Length: 112
Length: 112
Image 1 (cartoon, each protein chain N blue to C red):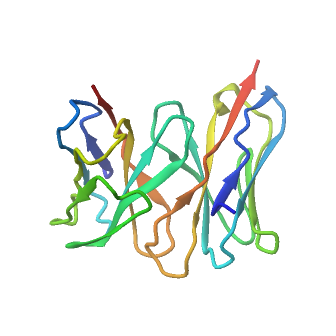
Image 2: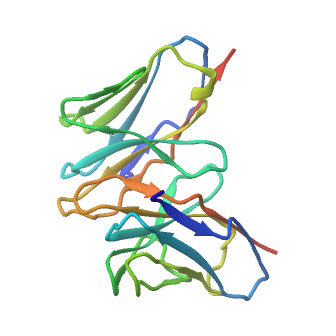
């Protein structure tokens, strides 16, 4: 079945550590996105990539980094510079044009 | 003015009721509009796209009003299973693969 897979589902990190969230899609979509959601809040865009080897900052990119070496994969690294990383992280992808985005099941990151 | 705004609710309605949500957007160049449903601690899932001519899917009807820059979602004959948060999403620019901008969501509780 086609879809977007995020792993892990739950992640615990100690303060000061970097951590990488995985996102893989087999929908053959060019565009991929990372959003962050805090309790009771909407989705805020962290980074997005419209094509392999290219990506742009979203509204809240500080403290995060990404790579897009393969069409299928768009990993997100939460660095120690991110001051408040505890959140629900959602990866999405979309086909070309003005189309809807499809989401993975999300990774819930907690800093302990 | 925020780019996409929704009444956060909650809307508490009895089973069988009709309920409507609105979502306003600030960018008149916005191209595509969507409603997503998000269950507690889950990823958003596409409910329906919103076309200029409107869109109906069973008990759900979505409308677009470009002149007043809002979209609406009408749910008829509400079911307990409709309880969720409903997010509106907009592609704000004229180029494709521009990331979706989300509202903060409207929470609906359908009560027996």
